[in-house]
Structure formats: structure tokens, C-alpha cells
Amino acid sequence: MPAKTGQEYINRVNEAKANVWINGEAVTGNISEHPAFSGVMKTQGELYDMQHDPKKRDLMTYVSPTSGDRVGTSFLQPRSREDLEKRRLMMYEWAKHNGGMMGRSPDYINSGMMAYGAASNMFATQDPFYGKNMEAYYAYCRENDLSLTHTLIQPQVNRGVNAAQLPDPYIAARIVEKTSEGVVIRGARLLATQGGITDEIMVFPSTLLKQSDEENPYAYAFSIPNNTKGLKFICRESFDYGKSAFDHPLGSRFEEMDTIVVFDDVVVPWDRVFALADVEVCNRAYNESNAVVHMTHQVVSKNIAKTEFILGILQLMVETINIGQFQHVQEKMSEVIVALETVKSFVTAAEANAKLDQWGIMTPDFTPLNIARNYYPKIYPRFSEIMQQLGASGLMAIPNEADFHSALRPDLDKYLQAANGDAYNRVKLYRLAWDVCMSAFGSRQTLYERFFFGDPVRMAGALYNGYDKQVYVDRVKEFLDRSEELAKNV
Ligand SMILES: Cc1cc2c(cc1C)N(C[C@H](O)[C@H](O)[C@H](O)COP(=O)(O)OP(=O)(O)OC[C@H]1O[C@@H](n3cnc4c(N)ncnc43)[C@H](O)[C@@H]1O)c1[nH]c(=O)[nH]c(=O)c1N2
Ligand SMILES: O=C(O)Cc1ccc(O)cc1
Image (cartoon, rainbow, N blue to C red; front, side, top):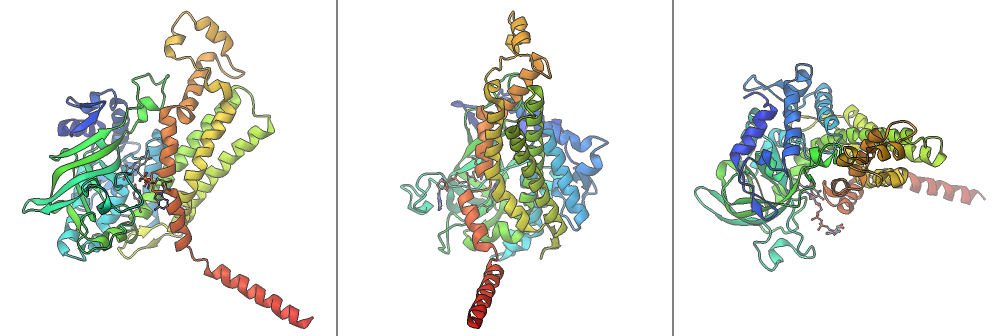
């Protein structure tokens, strides 16, 4: 089946009727018509439609090695640097469409799935069956242009103990039993962004399972359709308040939603199981397959678009109220420029030093990408801070669309005019800035950038522990030894 259109995406998710709960109610009708999801599903549909835009088709799709259909580029297994570049440009194109505000557009998980598909043998250590399942599932995702959510994390009950030691061993989703039909899973996982608005869910382990028992019931990997019996998505309050694009320019379009996932004795069919009670495979999964590298390649490509969007908003604000001549404004703007060029350089370096991995996949150099994923959670909150510092009261003097269509209009036109722009356009811009750095949508973006790739503290620890520092230690030792020689000559 060729890459899908936006309407096909919407129809498929609507028809699936997954068990999605929001505000104490199950979504019963078409989810794409529900006010909490209609805006984001429309946007996601626009991303899929880009695959059929004659001007973009060659970038957004490639010819499937099996069906000969044109399929989505985020499934492309790169064999050359050109392939990597094509993947990056495609992901950047999607991210530009949403200002980088949809971190979980389907290219994120597709990138991981692409790598797992190539590294499927890795899953075959206990039984070749699991490797075959992984390989077949990747091809299935690619040929059907699936959209996936995913969930890695166990409920945040008591981080001082492992899941088996919680008051109920079924708080964190675990294997209950194996039957002829499949593996039965009970318990919860979080946090599945885009939980209700995708086709399937990939349930992989979080980075490291500390328990090493041979038959660990928390160590598994599988993917199932979101409408599988017993699977439930519990949404947080929506940050799409049904307002116009003028009032809530981001929340009305890009509200991806985050969900808690409950497995009420869900039966995972055998052909969808990729690892079972296998701590070793689970712990190696992201790194050995290089899924984490390709997912980070997507993240950083997206973050280039996001930083460009932020820079563009800030510069428009500077021009609108004429503050570009002040030195501290220039300094703050240059902080964002430095961040943008830094993030771009990480991608350039990663691609320039790309190598074929053991699975035959052209793999970006992880070091610059790893630095990028450690850097961005620190710099993104600073963008928000700079936007508040430059926006000042302008972020609160933001009457809404209804005000502009009321008797207040002459007042607004007079008092909210700007050095470069009329009141309507100035407020339109400042409402956008408010949605980046003040609204519930905006503060979720900041939290997202801090945490979506895992705890930044442990990510920094992994960087420190994995980084080769010895060469520098040796150089300093050699230098100190040289000083010793000098001392002897005195
Ligand atoms: C907006 C948004 C969206 C998503 C997600 C998060 C957010 C905020 N996530 C979840 C994300 O993977 C998760 O937030 C991080 O892995 C961190 O885990 P916890 O949130 O459980 O924090 P956790 O409970 O682990 O940490 C809380 C605090 O305690 C500290 N801490 C806890 N244990 C520690 C330890 N052992 N050592 C040192 N410090 C420790 C942490 O540093 C942190 O300050 C997610 N996940 C997913 O699977 N799919 C998804 O789609 C998303 N989407
Ligand atoms: O757990 C990991 O090591 C990698 C990872 C983190 C977050 C995520 O969404 C996917 C993979």
C-alpha cells in the first residue's frame, strides 16, 4: 500500500475506535471530530498529505524494496550519506510545518522502527522467532504507513524500589501468563504522547531494567493496535481549548496529548512479541540496534526547525516594538543564534562522520547527536525565558479575536499599535509568543524538551560514563611528568 494521505490517516484512526478516555468520558464518536483532538489530527493529516504533494513527493517518499510502492521516507533504511541526508530533509520538512512543536510526529518512532527492522537479529538471541517478528513488523509498518505511539516508563510511584517491590506487582505493566494466543499483560505504563490518535503502540522497555532475574516479568517488547481489547488510554486535560488559530495559534493545531496507558489483561499475539522476559535484550535494544541514534537524528532535525521558529518569532517581536538597538536584546538574540548554529553543526558533524553499522545501515556518529540531546533540554527553557524577557507586558496585553470583532476595536487599534505593525498583527504575533512561553501548551513544550528522551540527569551520567576521557588524562599526566623533568634540572 503506498504512503497514505491525511484523510486515510484520519479514517483509519476513527474506524479503529480505540478506548480513549478524556474528562471522565470515553470518546465514542469519531476521535478526529472530538474538540480535544480535531486540531492536531488535522495537522497530522497535513503531514501525510505532503507525501502526495508533487513538489515534495520525491523527498517525502521512496520506492519500497518489496512492494515497489512509494512509502514514507522515515522508514528508509539508509545505506549511504545521501540516504541519511534525505531522511533528515524529510524530517525537517515535517517539523517546519509545525514549528517543531510536534515532537511525536510519526517520523520519531518510525526512525526507531527502521533501525529495529535492520537489527532484527538482535532480538533473535533467545529464539529466531522474535527476530523474524521484528523484521516482519517493520515491513508491515512501512507498507501500511502506520503511525505509532510508544510507552517506556513505569508509573511514578516509588523510584527508590523496582517495580516488583511496589505494593502491588501489577502497578507497572507486566507479564501475567503465556497462553496459546499470546502473552497476557496487566498494569500501566506512561507516558504515551499521541496515545489516542495513532494506529498502534510500541511497548518497549525503559533504558535499564535493574532487576536481572532470568524470568523477569517486566522485560518485554511488543507492538499492538491501539484498539486491542483491554487497552485503555487515559488522557490529561486537553490544551486545545477549541479556540481559533488567532487566539491559540499553537494549542489549536499541535496539541499532541499525553496519555497513561492501562493494560487490562491485554493479549499480545505471539507474532507481535519481539522480546519476552529477556532483560539482556531489553537493556541492549536501543543502543545495539542504533535505534537511539536514528531517533536522535530525527529529534535534532526537528529541533533545528524548532529553534528557527523561535528565532523568527523573537526577531519579529524585536522589530515590531523596535527594541533591536538595545545591547542586552542583541545579546539575548545572539544566544538563540548560537544555539541554532550549534544544533545545526551537531547534525552536520554526525552525518559527515556517519559509518555503516554492523547491520549495514549508514549510521550518524552518535557523539555529536548525544551532545545535542544533552544540550537541548538545557537551552530550550532559556528560549522561553528570553521570550518572556523581551515580550514583557506585551505577553499579557493580548486581547483575543472576539475583542477585535467588538466595539473595543478603535481602542485596540489605537493603544496596541506598534512601531512596525498594526494592533491586530501585533497581538496576533504576541499571542503566538504567549503560546510558546506562557500557556499550558507552551509550558508543556518546555517540560517535553526537558524529559522526553529520558531523565536528563541520567542521560548526562550515561554521557559522562561512556565518553572516552583517558586520552586527555594521559596528556595531562604526560605534561605533569614533563614538569617533573624540569624540576630535576633546577
Ligand atoms: C511531555 C512529555 C511527553 C512524554 C514523556 C514525558 C513528558 C514530560 N515521556 C516520559 C519520559 O520518558 C520520562 O519523563 C522520562 O523518562 C523521565 O522519567 P519520569 O518522568 O518517570 O521521571 P522520574 O520519576 O524517573 O524522575 C523524577 C525525578 O527524580 C529523579 N530521579 C528518579 N530516579 C532517579 C535515579 N535513579 N537517579 C537519579 N535521579 C533520579 C529525576 O532526576 C527527576 O528529577 C514519554 N515516555 C514515553 O515512553 N513515551 C512518550 O511518548 C513520552 N512522552
Ligand atoms: O530509553 C532510552 O534509552 C531511549 C529512549 C528514550 C525515550 C524515548 O522516547 C525513546 C527511547
